[in-house]
Length: 444
Image (cartoon, rainbow, N blue to C red; front, side, top):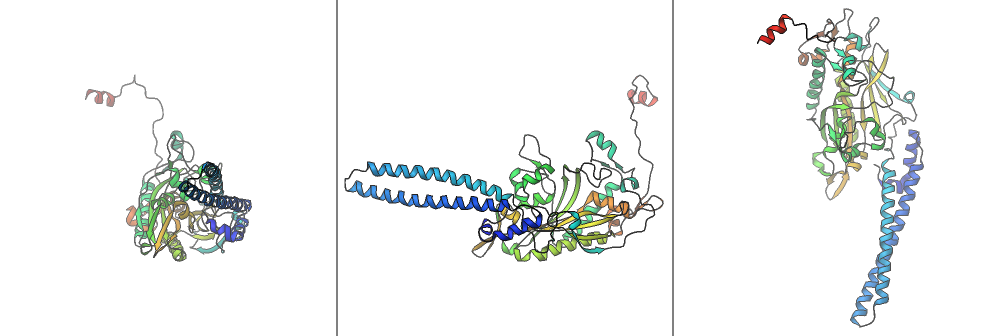
């Protein structure tokens, strides 16, 4: 959430950010109007309280002098009633003001390009050599015996999957590799709750905009997490941290659950866009002056991971219209997918300034002063998308897949070879036909 003082003193910068995002500036004016009305009422309340105090003092003096006080008492009661009415009105205005304010996005950083769509994003770096693969297959075809979306659809619905065999080992290897790398950079591994209550979730996101993307637990004040970022942000909610302890760096390990609302007909095959996946998330709490250095650190960690895996990628800074409501700046890492002949987003790195910290009331103490921390986050590894990327980039003509050398010590194997698809009996078992095995089993 933005600082209300900033709207009072420099609404222009917020309006410019709104325009850069392609959003209307009306909410800014509405907050300012509600705030002015709220403060005007508070001033009236203060004047009335002063009048009430004076009248009360007058009553005390009149009592001591033995004078009648009925008129003054009536006056005090009238003032008190007016105060009560105005305070109720003020509270209602404040709730309205804060509700509108909480839905105004973060102020975009100066370096964020203007624009409304993906076409306006700016490529700032390209790295790695694109492999030459004749007639590359999509990941779901490369490992069709190890990715089973048909049986998953039978028991859950679309965009779910069963992973089998060495793809499971590959996914675990990616997580272990990323955690080892991040621990060396002073990131503390964290296994967060997989559910959050509404208050905790609202501290990390604008829930009105994000709620349609996540799953709600029926009849419970709980939501399945869409990313470890939200749970890590909530870890220090309503706390005052010591300045000497900052920055605090965490590496969250968790499944993520998303409805993928609005993705109908998009990336429907395989495990690129799914309802359930695993992620390793970098998350940092720091002082404002540390934020740029920490952003560069988590971005460098992200690049090191994909460079070590030998995956070609590019870095893209998102334009105003593509940047989420919470970050001030986001740089995506887009990995190369040979079968699509395109770079696809696989990880995001964001500086959220003090936007989440204000909502979650996370501050740090510096001498006698208290300030809000800055928060930064990054998807170090999106496991299923990275598996898909490895399958496509390292597919071989004989149907095998080479495993990146950085993962060998975690997988225990250097390649995945094709095997016969696993088949199961899907008919109805005839209980009247007893086999020798059944008879033998029954006899036992």
